[in-house]
Length: 306
Image (cartoon, rainbow, N blue to C red; front, side, top):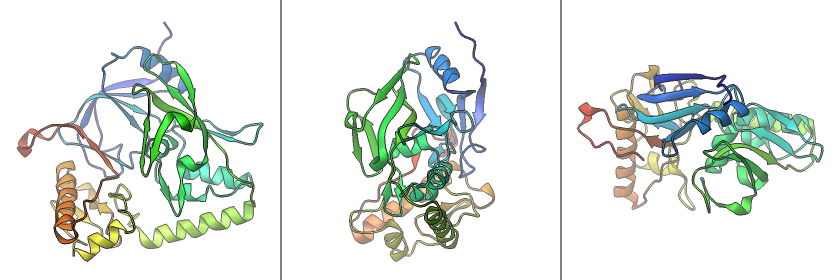
């Protein structure tokens, strides 16, 4: 069998790997060297081993009790980015979405600028159909490269997936992970794309608490409304639980100043926001962020994953 070239660690703390700077450990953490190395690693896992794919950790919270499974870290490893002869763009799952946005713009193609506003990787953007500023990831996907649990590559098209607002799922399989994708963007102007990227970055800096640990937008926008408006109207801006705080700059962000808040505090604050908005407006806010793992034994709450 081929030798693994990446690094496998036990009981890896996740606070240093997620943008909230909080959370418990994962039982095993694998840092592959490249896509081939990841494929070899997958062949050595039990077929029922719980898997967690981690890019920049910008949409993720691992509960304080930890995750009894294997986390695979793609950023810095699955980093191939190129333009193909047919004009499409190929990006592996670990490529940062803003990097793809800049690359496409510099190749004089348009409409990729929205990706600069997504603080994660291509893999995460594919998994949740990430979007902002009127753009959505899967609008531009021609086909994707998957790996199954045997490490085998599989090419799939959009027709193989159920694609919705901030949700993507395979119609006929559940044991495959996103390894890369081919995107198609319309021709444009490089100077215009660069100007648009600057504009969106300036808007993000002006409206979002980027200087504090956060996970981006916590909730999906309800149909015809905005989660931030509802949260602010409920009087929740600035609300705190044990160091976690609803941002005073953007109400759909929960921040963790100085990393003082635990995963439990962040999750409790999320629940409080949901309950208050439901009580006042009758609207159930749905999380965008993924929360999984076990509750801390001292919390007195159950350990069922989400």
